[in-house]
Image (cartoon, rainbow, N blue to C red; front, top):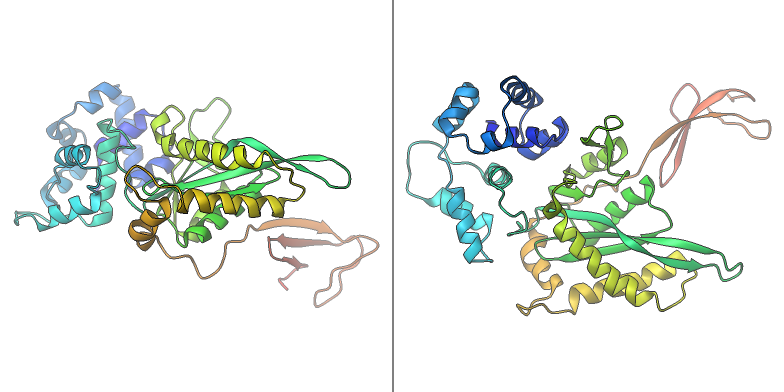
Length: 369
């Protein structure tokens, strides 16, 4: 059942169809219906936010009628108030209370749909996104702004090392690793390492709008879509990519906080030493991250690692049986000084297709080998 109020709010924010489908869990047809209705009636964000259920039912009679008639509606306003006064109050607790409440006519939402509806409510009613984070729900990712120099011991050549940062905002559990560029292969590889570091996968990954995460439909278009190679990784791990909104700094608050931690406690600390290899630097980064997560105690007396282990790790989705490998197909022409063997040898000048991945290559000449 579509939450047309949430869809309308996201349409008015100029979010893409893909983003809205992922965030609300609706169909493209429902997004299209809302988009056409908004344009035809000239509905503004202020008007959409103040619409009553009856007004929404008039605009979208089938969807809204089925939702209200078939399910008991949660008291999200009450849940938000509980969260404001009790920072340990979670959506899981709220859902249990909702399910266990005295029986009334209608069905109860499952936990996943309950969480999605709460997120939609928060977006429409401008509830601060960082009020409370659901444990194990999202991984926020970004590149740190500062870099570290790698100095070749022989030539003295300096190469920049870029720091990838991931954080689970509920526990604050941080992961960092360095690369010599910020290209797609490094971006995807960093995610694989992050999932393995946490020992599981969050249902949602929230990147900033880096070129390795999202693309624009066309020049000047404010909407962005997840790029194909990044989406392949998301599909492999069964997670949804929900980019942070460029005009909504609260979407990025936890990631920016983690980046600040990385800048101060990783880059700031390691910049005092000289590093000649990426492997050597990443070993040092790993030690710093272990200290950040396991030794620094916060106001409530807990460490990031303690809270992660007790409250978040059990909620993560399991890692897939096989590690993700980035795959690229290329057409290769056989040169004078080498050849490609299939069932029949390929001669000079013939074209063969090659699949190149992190682990190995597969070459074709008419058929797979």
